[in-house]
Image (cartoon, rainbow, N blue to C red; front, side, top):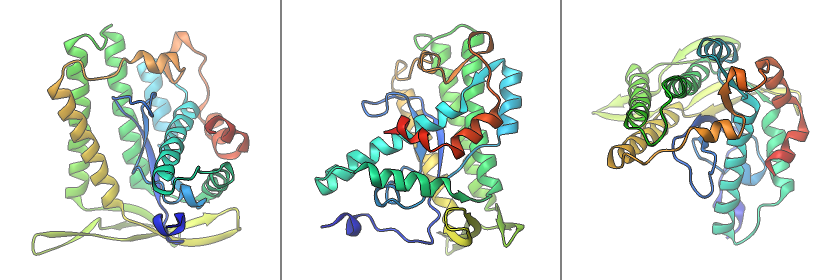
Length: 286
């Protein structure tokens, strides 16, 4: 069976992917900055994925308050590299072939060309990153590490906060989008006979590569459901084993997060611009 048949895609599918700090590393994800949803269909066919970015201004204000530095570019590129490595592994398992660089390059360039606004998802991934940074700062300021019970409890609290937030988002059943150049509030799902039916949402998307505007679709309910599943599983692992977490030094050692006195502070605007516009960043990923 060909890759085209195995990995079905639709041209109108926006395929949003955001990134978050996970608390468990694995053999393939040694630095656990993870994409969610963990979908690879667009990547393995060289089609575009929409990258959900946080509110840079709010994150910048938070790290100032916490006296931290976040290298946003390293954060994003690490998440993208993890996604690519995962795609390579799954592609080989299903096709017995290697995913070639030309396809990955085409995917990366097509993805960077997509510009759209989804205010609710921007807010939600800002929350995800912010909660982790607050937990990180708490542990750093109290000088506790992964061997300490308080460290462990702080990560359980992080998971609980994320689960509660996204459950409220689903219960509220509202999403803000930009459609036909106007901000609209749409539903995440329809309810009928105590069953939930996720809505397909359409938004305006600028395709800079082809110099045209497109209407593209996605299912936001599934993103929230995935986040709840991930953090519920993380909480379960933490509850089962008090040593089951990651040493925060991994972020320091890879110059992703640190105390302000230990690393040069970069301006988010510059980091974001470089991430969006510089093709050479792909070399870091490959």
